[in-house]
Image 1 (cartoon, rainbow, N blue to C red):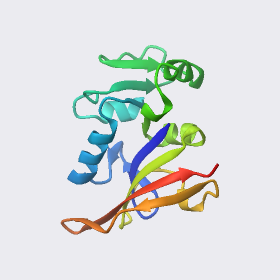
Image 2: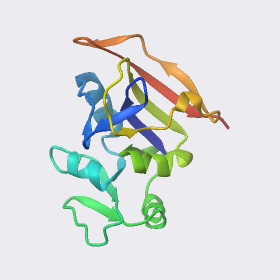
Image 3: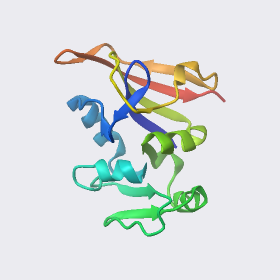
Length: 162
């Protein structure tokens, strides 16, 4: 599985169930790498999507709410149910897309992480674990500095050490 997220200097990923910032090249990268794949998300992340689902992808929503329904999405209520559903897909075709709780639950099962690292500290209420501080993760690629207006960011790739 692959984790994909954008995070600020403090590994913050969101505030009030919204992304911290929308960077067109980051959104384009996300769309290109996940289209045709399965994306795993929590209920709040699903509900924050402008179209309700991500078109061109298998949307899998992990929620404890047994009555939750979402048109166009596969709903699972536990990690066991999620793992059964994920057996249908090659591991490299599964992307964990948030939010904080889902990232934390599935981080140890991911072997790659694509992080758009934003060189700014936002006010936020959701964070990723700091991959730079986790010994099992290593930074294996980083883009040149990117800018969007006054926002400086980098595309980073982390891989789990074997």
